[in-house]
Length: 168
Image (cartoon, rainbow, N blue to C red; front, side, top):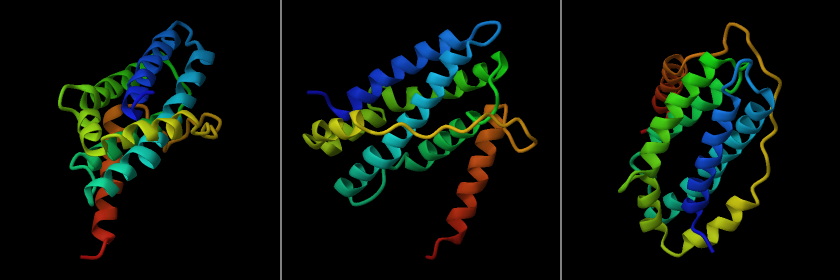
């Protein structure tokens, strides 16, 4: 049996392979569609299963939760636009930094394993059976982000606005 973090790490490898397969001229839209669906599901697993379990165990969110949520929001917003090689490069750069934050020695996944202990094994099944996220058609209008910097800036603005609205 695996820990949820081992499952998520394995999924990172799968995501990177799909993104690499999509990065052709022209873009392999089938590989990118698979990447997009798996990435959105993966983010959902972290946001709906892993982070809440850690919060329950600690009695507070992970210290890194705000930046992880901002990166998740930015990655999600980059999935809106029709992919081209420039967008894939933007996604790859942000995903690499994000995965490094989670996977490195002493990183988020290691912290989660310590906090969760044996519960990490029980959470694996929930992650494995998590349903796919419905995926919309691509949108390339004026509000669609095509760079990691723009997507991160928008996610940070939204997070700041939410913090200001929270009482006390």
